[in-house]
Amino acid sequence: MSSIELRALDDDDLDAIFEMMRDPEAIEMAAFTASDPDDRGAFDDWIARHRASADVADFVVTERGAFAGTAALFSVDGDRELTFWITRHAWGRGVASETVRLLVSHEPIRPLFARAAAHNGAALAVLQRNGFTEVSRSTAYAPGVGREVEEVVLTLVPTLDGI
Image (cartoon, rainbow, N blue to C red; front, side, top):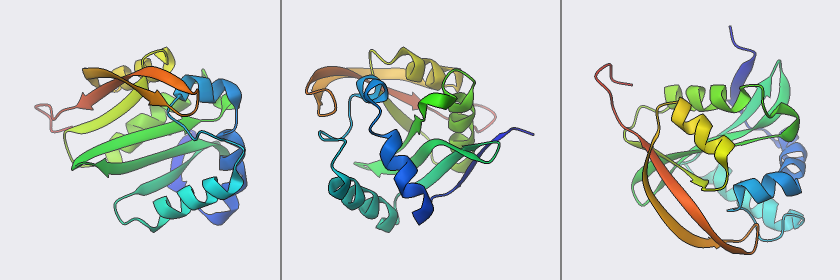
């Protein structure tokens, strides 16, 4: 049994999530983040919108029961997408890979999409290990880093075994 689990997000998680999303190294890697990661009001508004949407499934990632990040499933322009953010103390131990595997198992809709900054090799590797393949690249303004960044869109399509 894996020590990585997804559970429902609750109010007690909000401080940990806010702090995790302020990590400068993680922001640089993710790029497409809040323009002001220190703005707690904007964070609270953003997370409240997510939690209120019937289209968004928010999860907390735990490793051996401890907070290790967040993950979500949501729709953009009719396409189902997944996202994940793993706290730095959990990097490099397979937490992200297992998180994506669990998200994929939670979501029956295919194709399923994911996005990552092209310079975020770790996130791209995690997605590719879980069967995602690149479908496009484009450049867009990334508020977290305040500049144009190349974004990679990947997809997981149904296979013969239905996954």
